[in-house]
Image 1 (tube, rainbow, N blue to C red):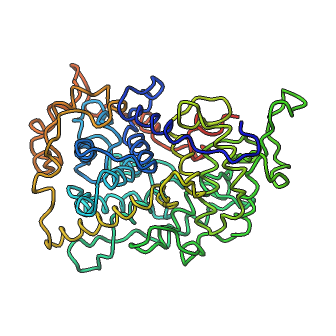
Image 2: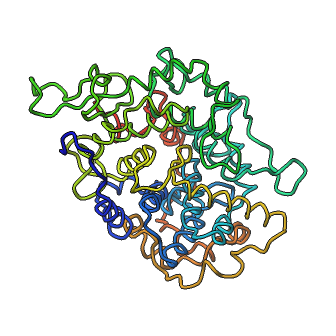
Image 3: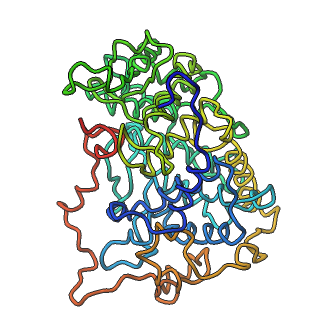
Length: 495
């Protein structure tokens, strides 16, 4: 612990941590999350980008082909090549809203320079994807996680609204009705109304006004509204505009809820009773030179990720000054920054990708000099946001027929070895990816003759395998629990 001095980010150790995640095997606990492989890939590549670590030409091409291989023929992206259900071809895995948002971010991250950025979305079926997104919205304005048998699956989770808003901003652009590539927009009025119904009695935000408020939900709600207000050419949140004003009926209450999340961290020698937690909520506003952490809900412990969820929300609201930057930085850098790089969830724990990425995001939002300027709304560097803007423009132009697609000239296929873009993430599927044909796949060919294009990635079929093995009970496992917090309990609030 560095006392009252200003601690610094151990940048080289963080770079080593993320490069290990990128190029070596991941620890065994990540095996259970293989179906969200695309999410982890986005954390890894975005973290390296935020730390100003460039990707090689080979790595960029491999990332692009891998991401496009997960594009679903009916719209959206699957979370992993192993996301297919038993009896289905690998490319027919279930597309979901989170994977789709992270896929678009990854394509932007994989581009280098303006020319590559303008072609970053080549191969993305923009119209089909936006129509798929429309089908995920319910009449009450909420969004599901995925489509199953044509029906919306997943609770009315505020995360889904945020991800829908991200996808809309990254792809929709300024295409007018009647123009080629136009797709009917989401029901924005109902979407805003759904977010509005999520504010609770204490000023926070939940899935509905009857549920427990949570800082993660607050970020998702404000992020969704902020992106609805954001112009297509902007890289940062604007002052509260129409959607944000309509969607937050009690702004002062929300600010009070967020301002109540800090904790003063007490060193071990200051504790009178070792049984008690070493955080003191009542002291947070009194200490100027201590270590200040944040929790996400009432009566919970401080957690690294809430420095981001709270700080990011306040930044979008234009109220970042509520946070005391110096003690908040000290908590991250003295208490949860790990000696091998990355950040742990809480004091004394091991680093993990989720908390390590959001720890960097929180520091970037605070203006850390070792990190790139950060886009609080999209949770990536502003440089990546600018590449996504170029990618959107290039995709819309190619749809209108004004430009030859860069993917047609073989750029992304040059010098691309048949290897995994993320060894740590894809080690369970090494052989399958080695045999996978060039991407993006021909959707029409896949629809008519999947054997030729997906043979290498098709899972083995045992005799007697039912091609539709899921009954209603198994399907319910996809439903989001109405009482679940915005993030995994394992990763957030285990109190």
